Picture 1 (cartoon, helix red, strand yellow):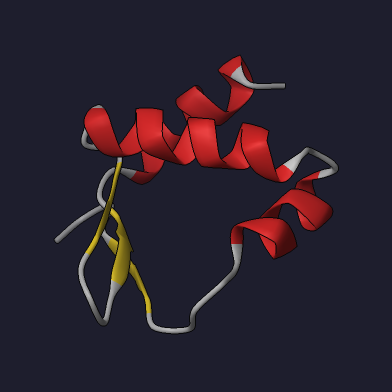
Picture 2: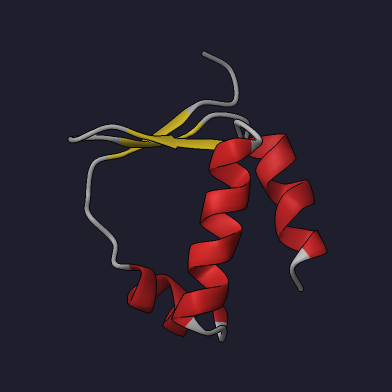
Length: 63
């Protein structure tokens, strides 16, 4: 659907942290928060951004 982005590649939290210039722990907390808010979701084989607009807004809160 609109705003849904699927990611098939596995990306480690440590790699996300390195790209974002953040700690792995901060990435873990942010992902957990976004998952609880329904912004991102995961299944065994697919990671998905459920709402790209909300993810962008949530990401600015963590800067």
